[in-house]
Length: 360
Image (cartoon, rainbow, N blue to C red; front, side):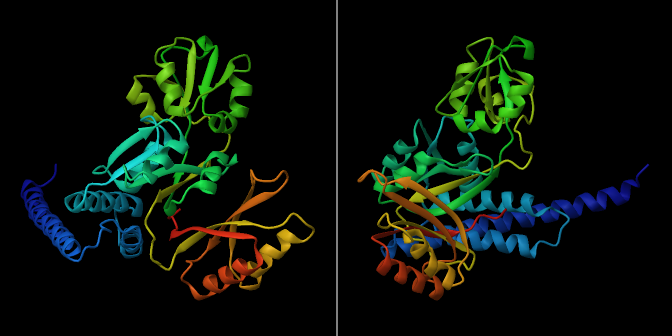
């Protein structure tokens, strides 16, 4: 049996640590209120600074001596910052809903529990809500490691004045949810087209006869499946809890490393953190060597290109707009010089934003 006196001493020490933590947390909150007062007196409306949060969270990882794992401490500090920011200015964030979608999970991961979230039914509606000023920020999916780019998000940037202020990388675990009791009872499977594609091999193997139906989101599919026996949804464990569904099969995605990247959009320009990404939109005449001409300044500057996508320009048939992600901030000398060269050589250059890279 454990020595009672030793346990009492350890518990007393934990109690003292808890009391000190409580004092320090409230002291941090008080400093946050003072920061808000200084900003208001200076007429500075930028209460939320994504680059500041990114630096703090990176330092948490770098300075963590253990035994708590890095991700556990990052979650704790994210919630501390979320609650402190709510004392300065409560954030309102739109996202591709409803509740239980992976975009919902990504939004909570990035902004914490203190932010007020607004679920919306379409990606362009999220953009519109932020553009109107009714919400501070929006969160939308941009690409999946298995199925590639979310074209609707890319298309929205062609007309929107919004900037990318941050990114979120989320491991995606798909589960088969239903109000039915058995896998054998499932006649149809509903999900967002990307989720259906990410689970194609499993569905071919386990439910080859089941109809596959598209839904605007996995959360909406879970909502519908809750009212339809014989229908299953591909969605998250959170969606199962939210809509009272049974999990008939877990982790049905075809790749175990299935990951989705989300973008935070807003009207805020983000300062450099030293670990940033810059997204741009380019167009050029449709002639031999034109794409090479666009990419050459990037290669010559030694800048890493992490993504390139093309979309129809919607102006002239067979003309395209290119979307690129570059490593670095637009204020970095090498990136700034490269963007200057691109501005001279491209027919159009639009900088969609520089923002902190998500930790992976």
